[in-house]
Length: 393
Image (cartoon, rainbow, N blue to C red; front, side, top):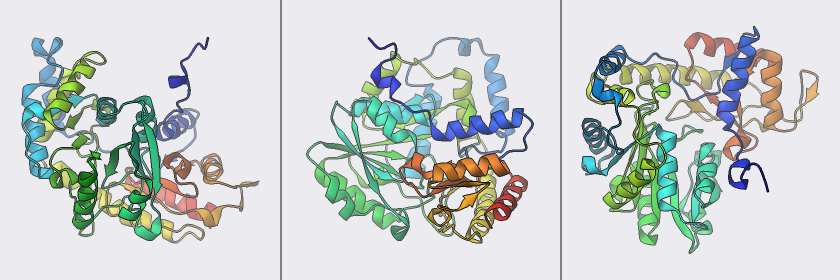
């Protein structure tokens, strides 16, 4: 009998977290590492949010368990924000507060999927989607969208993979890892396609506030009547990745079932962090605009730098805070005394030789590509770009 279950033993650690851990280990060893790896805003959490958390610490009520679905005021704030930003019409009872956006994705899959149910996953995809689907008993069906379509999956591609076992479609726009943003027209087409077939859509809207160059965030849920779930959180827009507050929004029966699941797994989310999230959603929003402006500046700087490197083919991202260049032109080259044959080896060579951390495309279902996060300081971004140009030039 195995010591570790096959279900858990088969899971590979998150590639983005692995890159972050490796970079941190090298820093602790005294190396000057510049990391383009994690999708973690480098800004401090805004002061009014931290102050709300500090105040909540003094309230003895927050030292106790609270309702599993979340604090009533926070659920109302999430409902208001979702109605305003996503264009849907929900009540607070349709909100489940979760331990971060990743937990919301897991709760959605666990609630919707039965063993053998298929979930279409447009690739390049966020590293955790396939594992989350598998843990829930589902079967991920990747559909690769490349640069020719701006990393956007087409209806024809979906038609080729849909089967009678298809239960859901994962949809994320703006996209991690590519920065792609679907047009409102394409979003409506995808919504119609799913609705006509009775397919659920799990819409990851965590990057809704970060769009550039006239691109427009459009929620697929707004074009569907019932079979949709939105997952979101405060990590990206409010520079709160460590606070671990997300949410799942959907039909009442789905949220009721997901709440029951959460009651037996994590109970309620940390009350202090929930009060911080409430302050984020209901307080001043200037910081969100400031973060978007900073990411836009960094986006243009990074795109220019990557486009100047022979062997890298990069399209400018329209959203989120990632660039996803095709690095096939660098493969087969000798770098640092070794010949790199894939982007895993390329990322390893870059980290070990010039102390710059990136994430290989294999982690996102897209070999030949690498992901750069530009959620790092302007100073470090410029230094990292110079190192890359010198090493790969």
